[in-house]
Amino acid sequence: METPKLTHVVLVSSPGLGHLIPVIELAKRFVLLHNFKVTVIAVTSQTSPAEAQILNSLLTPSLCHLIDIPSPDISALISQNDAVFTRLCVVMSEAKLAIRSILSEITPRPSAVIVDAFSTETIPITRELDILGYVYCASHAWMLALVLYSPVLDELVEGQYVDQTEPIKIPGCKPVRPENLVDPMLDRNDRQYTEYLKIGKGIVQSDGVLVNTWEELQREELEALREGGSLSEALNMKIPVYAVGPLVREPELETNSSIESLVTWLDQQPTQSVVYVSFGSGGTVSSEQMKELAWGLELSEQRFVWVVRSPIEGVADAAYFTTGSSGIDEVAKHLPEGFVSRTREVGLLVPDWAQQVTILSHRSIGGFLSHCGWGSTLESITNGVPLIAWPLYAEQKINAALLAEELGVAVGPRVLPTKKVVRREEIAEMVREVIEGVESVKGNHVRERVKEVQQSAMKALSKGGSSLVALSHLVNIISG
Image (cartoon, rainbow, N blue to C red):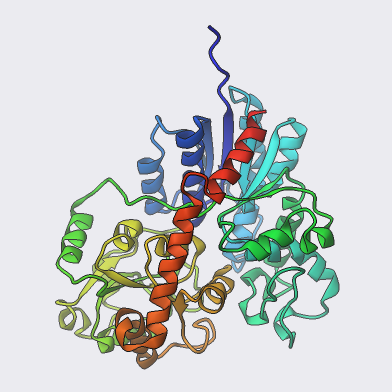
């Protein structure tokens, strides 16, 4: 009897945990739910211990094949002041020849290639090789709509976006306030803006887009994006959009002495009594803000786990390429004098990076002070944990607006943390709001809403749920 043909899909990821983890989770779905053969081409930073740990622990040979491409040397192609966004785009542009070589030689021949948003220059290569080419937007549908519509906005809007007095309109979607726009749109003269526009133009050249959201969460935006929708019509876009999320990690199975001691500490705390504080794999705050955050946590009189890294002035994404490289002694010297000893009974400091899903899934966690990266946001929501929105860079401000204003699953400071230092009194107030929900009408509402959205997410991923059905539709097309 003839062996059935194995469908082979190649996924391409740019550097950074926020890009790598969603790609790996998508790879798992193809393997475990649809028995595909999957190869992940990961262009890696080579400077992030956490990135290496994720690759080693999640991509077992039995799951999928990993091809690790070290980041090309781009020192002659960028300036010292170029943003992380620009560097990522240039890295992936320079890596495309190596990616093309792999795609043309790999066996069995891929039925489809799925690239992340920074890798859209690979799409013309898939066309040339006569392979289906898709883009995986690891963010939400509102963000995807903004990226796709930005080349049109570039022609419609005069002057800087941040100087506009009215929200930026997107057909069929909620408008975006200028202060919540993604970082590349903050200065139209910056090189990252040009690179950002290329992504929007590149996505529409693909055979379809996968997005890390679900139908029930963002029906309005998804309808606008699909054929016949107002945004799709405005862009003359004919490609399908598949809502396949939420794609999030499971709690880590691998343990070590540090994670075991952390879980032991969490086991000793009351249910929903601990606020988890983390600015993601790349986020940093200033020295002044770090001290105010420490005082705020102490002032709140609530229990906390804080993933803490040394402050860096003026650059919110300074740790992007070096995640996992700080020690606790180095970090502690930046905290208020006596803070560590005074909070020893109620707080736990974790240097630089933590196994986040293990923490968020623990019953003692009652809130998450987060940078609002979409991956972290979904990990919080799927564990029913309300958020304190603290956006720092990239698309995090639009994420925070979605969470606090549209979905009602987060509280946030009165002024964006990117505009001014958030003071200790306000920090303590927000922490008490999510942890002591019983004393706060708003806190209660946020807790209830996050449980509702959690149920909605679980339904989308259950048998017959919208996201599983969407992925099955795509699988049928790829399998031919």
